[in-house]
Image (tube, rainbow, N blue to C red; front, side, top):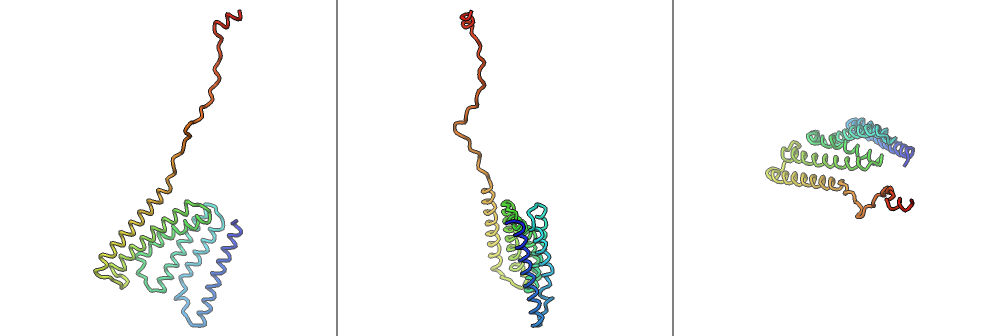
Length: 215
């Protein structure tokens, strides 16, 4: 896919996003929904998406920073949108893992897909896996053990949560080990019978018998 086709796709996606937001605002006006209370995070999400679209216009290495920054902004808006709907603002105690390093890994992954860089794709996947494990681990600790959101398992949480944390840590460790093993390049193979380099022709010297024969 060339740059023009990618730019057209980004433009169409942005147009559909603006169309959906505009339609939602229009419908909300008629049914008397407080739009500002619901949609104010889109003032963060939409600019983040625009920044990412600017970074996707070209595969030049300098645009990777735009994609990563746009991902950070957009993920921040998405987290705020979910918290605004659910009212679980205390989730920032562990939702930061989705922002750092999660959004950075997402930016690396998307940039790697756009530029065809397999290394960046793998780095982004690993970073997002780490972010997900951190999010789940800290979420269980703050929500289940400490009960900051009103949910508490009591005595059972003292056993379930550590077991889940151990399982998550083991899964992350095994995943990272298998990834490192796949990146190890095989040793170079050498031919069994290496060719013998050509030797320079030996300088022929006349023996004393040849000299006497000529005389």
